[in-house]
Length: 319
Image (spheres, rainbow, N blue to C red):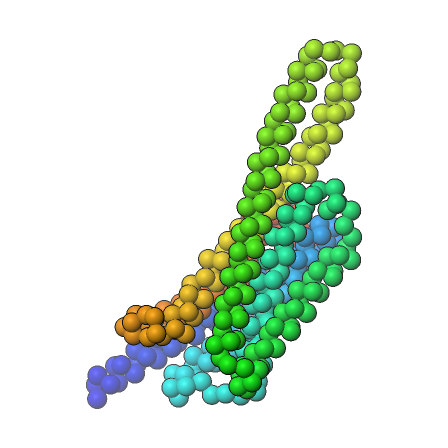
């Protein structure tokens, strides 16, 4: 009786600990992304068209903190009390919303990576791109996420097999991750090429100025133009690096969750039964997965100067 009581107390302590951890993540996610949305909707940030995508990502992360994490806390408590998670229409809607937000985040990061490739590899075409194109891109991301997340209800009500829905989510994640990695590889190769070009152009310009004094003014103008191009490319490079960090954090925090999903799904077919992950491991991967949603505003504040400047103005009520 004593051992049973101690075990129950330990179980309650574990339940409270995990619920508290997920609750802190939820609160941090809501707070951080509310601040990010307030900053990204200011005119100073909206001049940079990539901010439309960052804003879209912040909205997705905010809904994770508001709906997905609380729903998962409910599932933890429900499973602890009854040994299973009771089904309800509301819970099904929230789970579908979780899938929707996950797909929205994944597709948004993918399109950001592709946009950065476009900006760095085709700078002239990128500068003439309209805001309408960005608005349509964001709309397309969420329409696609809506259509695909609706498959959850087909799975929930046994209209499609569980394995079809499962492999669909896994392939969507890994395909998007592969596209992101290819995009950043292309950016890295282009950045190396442009760095070499400007180094050669700088040497040629210096030699021309020392050899022909009469053409000094022309050389100076050309040098100034090149410096402006260099600064523009450097700004694009810094933004690409920031988005690359956001994408890397996304992959590192989501990958364990999908790996555990694969292990649990395959069960004893591939892995030995003793290799099945514990609930503690599953909860840890899920916590890491949700933690990604509050890390993005932290990265923005550390990496984006305009974000920090606007945030400071909001804090001190400056106009």
